[in-house]
Image 1 (cartoon, rainbow, N blue to C red):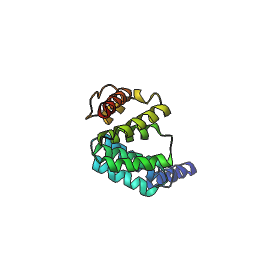
Image 2 (cartoon, rainbow, N blue to C red):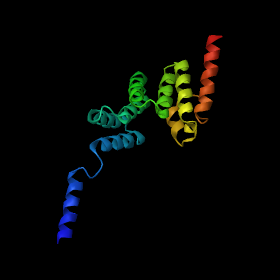
Image 3 (cartoon, rainbow, N blue to C red):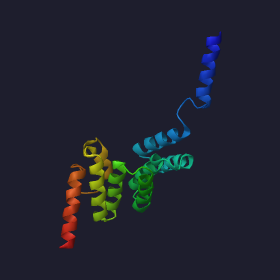
Length: 163
């Protein structure tokens, strides 16, 4: 009987949210990622805003919101959130790469180049992660070639503009 009572108490705590399951912050992050990946950026934005409200000193919420804003074409706002995420955790390669994408969309090619180079310096294998490139460069040339290829394209574009 004691064992049954203990199992029931544990089950109740899990259902009631007594701290044994994922936190509400983790829920917000997971919900945001799910909504972003299933084409619901407005809902993802709400989820990441919720996460930031819960833990404003953790980079993941800002990074998720920045990625959502980037997908929505709100590049200036995305850059602000990437900056905040990088202030909190300066060694996040994906934040540099994603911020580079936002700069690229705005035609700020030199800033994009600097971000791509920093991201590749921090994680040389970031170019090889499946699905990463399709999400970032959907409206740019060479979309199937990866970050390094896009970086070379931007360097060529800057060179053309300057001379």
